[in-house]
Image (cartoon, rainbow, N blue to C red; front, side):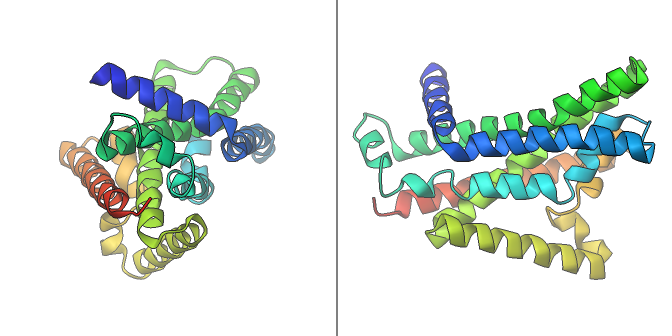
Length: 240
């Protein structure tokens, strides 16, 4: 079962690479990472440039890239090639999870394309970082991948329910903006939204309070489960 899932996810990832959207998003992410090195050097951001880039770009830019990818992850195929996949001896649930894992891997590659140039640029400009700084960068990268994957899962679910990648993209962006505004006006509600990277993941990097770390992981896990279940329900109900 695991081998079949890995094979299906790999095939779906290759399919994403054959399209133009993922290539554009990867290139854009890489260019942004390179530009951030020059901008960070000009601004004097000497303290762990790669981690600073992750924290800043996850505020707006990377969420938009994840929503752009997630909103078209499955809905674009529902009236086309997915019909051929359903002729195979696999269930809709199995196909859905394979596509979701492929999308998650693609999202991780987008984050890496931003992280790698900033990390290399930091090495060139400031030399080998201390062990603690290197550990923080790796932890920040892992947290960014988890957080970005969550946004992709939620955007995919929204698009499947509204029935359109374009409408799903708009709805996801509007929801993001609405949660940001509500969180700004009512800061105590931020912990319930997916718009505050600092509140969710920084305790994993800097906090010494175990309860805060566990709380962050529980919120992410809960939203992953909710997004996956809602997306699967919409995928099962969809007429193909």
